[in-house]
Image 1 (cartoon, one colour):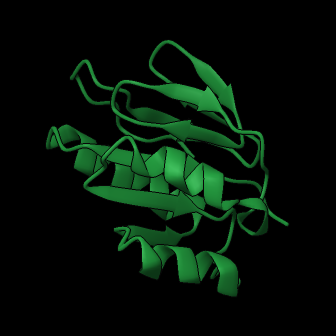
Image 2 (tube, rainbow, N blue to C red):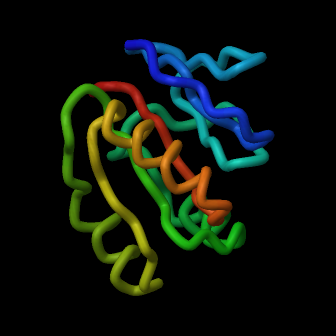
Length: 122
Protein backbone atom coordinates (compact mmCIF):
# COMPACT_ATOMS: atom_id res chain seq x y z
CA UNK A 1 0.00 0.00 0.00
CA UNK A 2 1.27 3.48 -0.92
CA UNK A 3 1.16 6.19 1.74
CA UNK A 4 1.47 9.97 1.41
CA UNK A 5 5.06 11.09 2.10
CA UNK A 6 5.85 13.79 4.64
CA UNK A 7 8.34 16.58 3.96
CA UNK A 8 10.08 16.37 7.35
CA UNK A 9 13.60 15.03 7.82
CA UNK A 10 12.39 12.24 10.12
CA UNK A 11 11.98 8.68 8.91
CA UNK A 12 8.59 8.29 7.30
CA UNK A 13 7.30 5.04 5.87
CA UNK A 14 5.80 5.64 2.44
CA UNK A 15 5.04 2.05 1.46
CA UNK A 16 4.53 -1.23 3.28
CA UNK A 17 4.47 -4.78 1.97
CA UNK A 18 4.34 -8.14 3.72
CA UNK A 19 8.15 -8.46 3.79
CA UNK A 20 9.56 -4.91 3.54
CA UNK A 21 8.93 -1.20 4.00
CA UNK A 22 10.01 1.67 1.80
CA UNK A 23 11.07 5.07 3.11
CA UNK A 24 11.88 8.18 1.05
CA UNK A 25 15.43 7.08 0.23
CA UNK A 26 15.66 3.57 1.63
CA UNK A 27 14.07 0.16 1.72
CA UNK A 28 14.20 -2.15 4.73
CA UNK A 29 13.28 -5.80 5.02
CA UNK A 30 11.00 -6.87 7.85
CA UNK A 31 11.33 -7.44 10.71
CA UNK A 32 12.74 -4.05 11.62
CA UNK A 33 12.85 -1.33 14.25
CA UNK A 34 12.24 2.23 13.18
CA UNK A 35 12.39 5.50 15.10
CA UNK A 36 12.27 9.02 13.66
CA UNK A 37 16.09 8.82 13.29
CA UNK A 38 16.95 5.10 13.25
CA UNK A 39 16.25 2.11 11.07
CA UNK A 40 17.61 -1.35 11.82
CA UNK A 41 16.94 -4.99 11.15
CA UNK A 42 15.77 -7.15 14.05
CA UNK A 43 17.06 -10.58 15.06
CA UNK A 44 13.59 -11.87 15.96
CA UNK A 45 10.74 -12.30 13.49
CA UNK A 46 7.48 -12.63 15.43
CA UNK A 47 5.84 -11.33 18.59
CA UNK A 48 6.46 -14.61 20.43
CA UNK A 49 10.22 -14.31 19.86
CA UNK A 50 10.65 -10.98 21.66
CA UNK A 51 12.83 -11.51 24.74
CA UNK A 52 13.25 -9.52 27.93
CA UNK A 53 16.71 -8.31 26.85
CA UNK A 54 15.25 -6.88 23.64
CA UNK A 55 12.47 -5.12 25.55
CA UNK A 56 15.05 -3.62 27.90
CA UNK A 57 17.13 -2.36 24.94
CA UNK A 58 14.04 -0.69 23.51
CA UNK A 59 13.26 0.79 26.93
CA UNK A 60 16.73 2.41 26.95
CA UNK A 61 15.63 4.51 23.96
CA UNK A 62 13.15 6.17 26.37
CA UNK A 63 10.25 6.22 23.93
CA UNK A 64 7.00 7.98 24.69
CA UNK A 65 5.27 5.09 22.97
CA UNK A 66 6.33 1.72 21.58
CA UNK A 67 4.31 0.43 18.65
CA UNK A 68 4.58 -3.24 17.80
CA UNK A 69 3.20 -4.22 14.42
CA UNK A 70 2.41 -7.92 14.62
CA UNK A 71 2.03 -8.62 10.90
CA UNK A 72 -1.11 -8.61 8.77
CA UNK A 73 -3.36 -9.06 11.81
CA UNK A 74 -3.26 -7.67 15.32
CA UNK A 75 -1.95 -10.28 17.74
CA UNK A 76 -1.62 -10.20 21.51
CA UNK A 77 1.58 -11.34 23.21
CA UNK A 78 1.87 -14.44 25.33
CA UNK A 79 1.97 -14.12 29.12
CA UNK A 80 5.76 -13.58 29.52
CA UNK A 81 5.75 -10.50 27.30
CA UNK A 82 2.55 -9.16 28.87
CA UNK A 83 4.19 -9.55 32.28
CA UNK A 84 7.26 -7.57 31.11
CA UNK A 85 5.09 -4.78 29.76
CA UNK A 86 3.26 -4.46 33.08
CA UNK A 87 6.38 -4.91 35.20
CA UNK A 88 8.30 -2.17 33.38
CA UNK A 89 5.24 0.06 32.87
CA UNK A 90 5.98 0.29 29.16
CA UNK A 91 3.78 2.38 26.86
CA UNK A 92 3.28 -0.40 24.28
CA UNK A 93 0.53 -0.73 21.70
CA UNK A 94 0.05 -3.89 19.64
CA UNK A 95 -1.57 -3.57 16.21
CA UNK A 96 -1.39 -4.79 12.64
CA UNK A 97 1.58 -3.59 10.60
CA UNK A 98 -0.65 -1.35 8.48
CA UNK A 99 -2.03 0.40 11.57
CA UNK A 100 1.45 0.53 13.12
CA UNK A 101 2.87 2.34 10.09
CA UNK A 102 0.08 4.93 10.05
CA UNK A 103 0.41 5.51 13.79
CA UNK A 104 4.21 5.74 13.61
CA UNK A 105 4.07 8.28 10.78
CA UNK A 106 1.55 10.42 12.66
CA UNK A 107 3.40 10.38 16.00
CA UNK A 108 6.81 10.98 14.44
CA UNK A 109 5.55 14.10 12.62
CA UNK A 110 4.70 15.47 16.07
CA UNK A 111 8.44 15.22 16.91
CA UNK A 112 7.73 12.69 19.63
CA UNK A 113 10.08 9.87 20.57
CA UNK A 114 8.37 6.81 19.11
CA UNK A 115 9.74 3.32 18.51
CA UNK A 116 8.02 1.03 16.03
CA UNK A 117 8.74 -2.67 15.55
CA UNK A 118 7.35 -4.20 12.38
CA UNK A 119 7.30 -7.97 12.57
CA UNK A 120 6.42 -10.82 10.22
CA UNK A 121 3.34 -13.01 10.34
CA UNK A 122 3.69 -16.27 12.27
